[in-house]
Image (cartoon, rainbow, N blue to C red; front, top):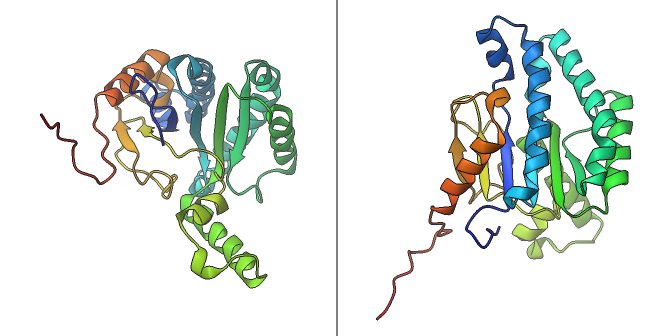
Amino acid sequence: MASGTDGRPKNVAIIMDGNGRWAQKRGLPRTVGHHRGVDRAREIIRVAPDLGIETLTLFAFSTENWRRPAYEVSVLMTLFRRYIRREAAELDMEGVQVRFIGRREGLPRDLQNLMHELEARTKDNTRLILQLALNYGARTEMTEGVKKIARAVAAGEIDPEKIGEETISEALWTGGVPDPDLVIRTSGEMRISNFLLWQIAYAELAFVDECWPDFDGALLEKILGSFAGRERRFGALKAIGLG
């Protein structure tokens, strides 16, 4: 993890929460909130590089979200398809490298194909790494990572005595991507909800009252500025000047 020269985080993860509640407060169907949430994600992705963010991870759909009403899940899947089709060219033109993290099995086959195509199209872009967590759960991710390492041990590819934190990090869906410096959650909820449990061991946390459809670039910039004033010691003592 590393911060920019101005102390702002380079790697940010956001739990985009509150779409349904935003709509219900306005007497609108929950699905309207999801539509507005997609628009908001588009804005944040666009402004992120200008704010010094190099890696942005957005929690779009969790493994637990399948418990929602079937109609709402169907709308979300349609929104994901539409987003990829509409935004692929612009994301590529803007230098965004898109990675999807999560369990692809269980997602509609045509959506899986679109995800693969977008990843392949943008794989060489470097202006921003965008990780979209879709059908994602951290415990599932870690379970799959352990299985991957176990298979490598069984095949004689890894000495179990040499397994370290780096081995585990590389086995996760986020392998090769820097860990977040900062995690933001919208809608006033103050929990992590099974998101990047391994990767955020030393991340700073920010909880904001605004629901995701009301979260804009100005608020993101304000949070990044607040982050710059925090002292991150990673378990060490505060440096004491000697004179």
